Length: 73
Image (cartoon, rainbow, N blue to C red; front, side, top):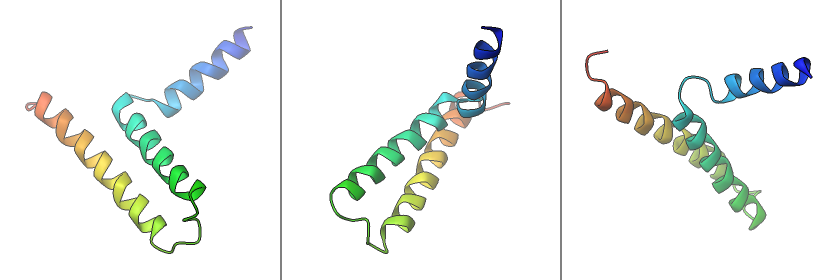
């Protein structure tokens, strides 16, 4: 049982890490990407760059929120 608990603790800490908002933004972008693929856009050459920009935008917005909340450190 200790192994199972340690296993899940590792993956939680690895995926969520210090900031759950970054993990949530990645999950949202992955869900949006899956929606596009399920609706027939899997052959689109624009889908990967659009999702990459969405990931960057999500990370940037989360970073801006965190900097605004903690301006001095």
